[in-house]
Amino acid sequence: MKKTLLITLLTLTIFVGVFCYPAQAQSHPWCVKATIEHNGKTFVYDMQNYLNRADSKVAYLGKSSKIELYNYLQTLPLSEGETYNYILPGFDDILQFFAHVCHKKRDAYVVFDKEGFRYFAGNDGVSINKKALFESLLYANNGATIHLPIMVDKAVTVAQLKHCTTKRATFTTAFPNSTAERVHNIALATSAINGTVVGVGEGFSFNQVVGKRTEENGYKTAKVIVDGAYVDGVGGGVCQVSTTLYNALLLAGLTANACQHTLVSNYVLPGFDAMVSDAGADLTFVNNTGSPVYIQGFVQNKTVTFVVFGLPNEWHIERESITQVTPFDTVEIVDKDKYPELVYTDQTLVVKGGRN
Image 1 (tube, rainbow, N blue to C red):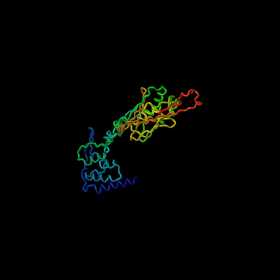
Image 2 (cartoon, rainbow, N blue to C red):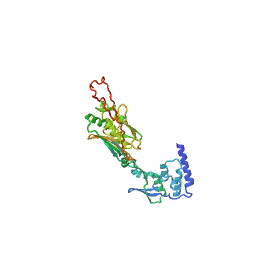
Image 3 (cartoon, helix red, strand yellow):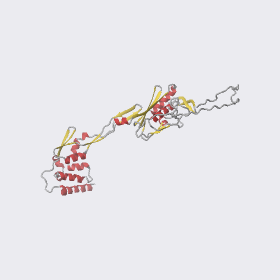
Image 4 (tube, one colour):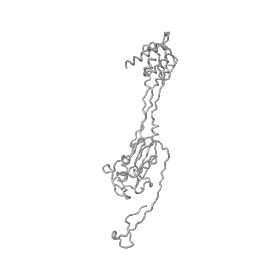
């Protein structure tokens, strides 16, 4: 380390003495004097005030020789500060005087939770362009006024964040005749999803976010669909939550994977339901929008609503339900032993109702 520094200093001494120092020494140094100004504040730089800090040979160099020396020093393993202060002693005093101008960049940021969006402003990063300032002093005529050159590092703004948190889609379904237990389950599952953020490239799983629908987790018994029939089950009504979210995701342009019930739900068009169960049926999607996706959900006035936020939709999306109806057949069974209540030959008994 010391050997390298000695070699560098020796090189500088030889260069200054042989190539840059005038053959006939000047009686006065080439004066660098200028006023640096920024927002009403000024700093007068006069190199003569710093001669006690300067190498005498460097101080007495002419303008062209100083420029030549500067170009040469840039080829050596010296820091910018070492170079600037070697040629223009006291250069750091200028930087210190205008230190208040400098600020680190702080991006605006957004917080999304069950209460919605909250935005927090940031600020641009500002720094002094040291190279531009040094060269302005070096090349300027004595007595010149130099406007402090600054560099601005633009921060993310609240406006940009709001663009990335645009409403992409919303969807609502109603449950006007649901029991109190079913309403409770819908509200509980919706609350679990409300405030969810899905990052870029991340996946979403309804079952993972909501958790198992058990009494231990607060769910109550209500009607569920099992094998084409309505029966009592813990967590009844949660499928309306997944269905509502599924349709919001579709309208938001997200490719969601869903399973369908064995019965057509009365709160959504055929084909647009999304069954979920602890046994494995799930509602999933991967965020491929290039920006985080934010999901808001709420229950009010016997309706459940989901809103999906993110980058603005590239397309306007509409849903279309196309149905194909296959009429059910009627199978007649004649078995007096199995159905002894049928006494007369014209009597009939519906054992199991049909469905198209």
